[in-house]
Length: 525
Image (cartoon, rainbow, N blue to C red; front, side, top):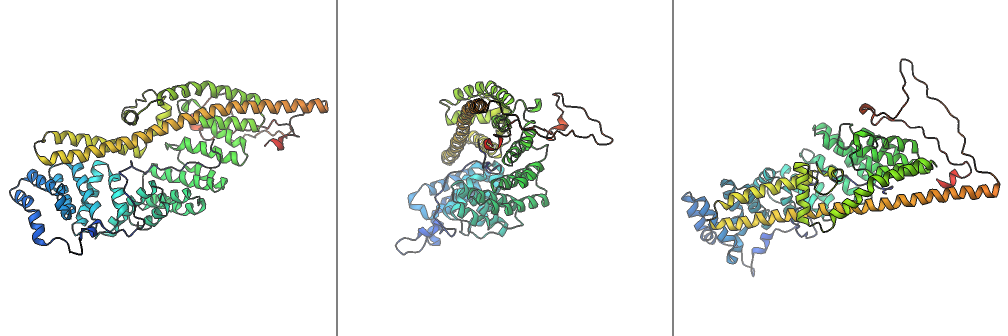
């Protein structure tokens, strides 16, 4: 179990794009600088006019498809390399006119990868952003801007470029560069709250948990001021709580875990993690009370094996061995068949099948061979949903391209889109497959741990009997003063008899008296 650290939430990350090499500095020279050969300057206006002559002629006649063919001829001609960037940018404009937005995005991204600072680049950047939003694939631009965030653009546009570049560098583990890029995101940018949250996540990854609190709290304040959706606000609060937890400030962590809204999809997770904070404070009553939610009928189909196991450990530390043993048997009965099913389903699972499984579950709720609760947390994952949306746009556009296959540009553009679609399927399918394998291995480890816990209880009871053999008497349980809660004036009180009410979730109170012998309790905790 993870007792000292908790994972950081990365709901805002979109699917992974094609990786681009980083040159090691924010001020990366544009690829256009390589166009000079043997000290000679770039192409002359006459050479440029000659290179684009066929394109200009077809465009003048209104033949946009043939003009696209002429541009494809340029970008596939090794002798025309100095004109690649501009040709891709022009091709992107034509493909947009032909209602091929994904192909247009691919062309603009290639243009910007070659030169993000040419005189045509500002317009290309603006169009690339609009197209990426339309097809749901802003991740395609992340490796492009990770190479260069220059260009003659306004501050808001540069902020968005820097944010996408930061996300790419974060995925590549370049935390220092990521933080440098995030400083380019201005306060007025729509992505400012996202940038501050990513900054907090990066600082936590570097082990700087206290430093992470400032940007995370700023992300929260900005999200509130700009009226971001409740899902984002709750995600920020969860990350703030996790930062306090990682910094060892468990009372403040409890405060922020408790602030996650009860109607949020993160609420049950926050209650579980809050239970860990109480556990670290040795408040076993608080831990058991919070985990009482997870055992209610309202969440019986949810997948929280670690919560079940944490409850066992809390009972063990209270020396409530019969109840702990009962909970262990319940855990094994509930999760052993789940583990066996997951182990069989993950064996030989390909990346393509894993993506198809994720796609089917997200769109239709079909979990395939896996227990539905295991996949439930993926249903609303922004990154997965973005990947599915992008793949669907790519497949729709490939179908349209097949209807106009007579033009030479179609084969080239289809190849770009198909390569991108396959790349998304491979990357996301492998990520999903690895998550399933990891979850399976983790559950297997938990089943092993409960067996060890049962042995620990037997060993502890053996020590009690050994002590009794020496002293001649069995150690008494530690005696504590018993006080009854008084019912406040104007209130009615019904004792708990096993019933659950939805409006009581999150408000349960447990008074579990430790049953450890007074002479041994402190040495066992």
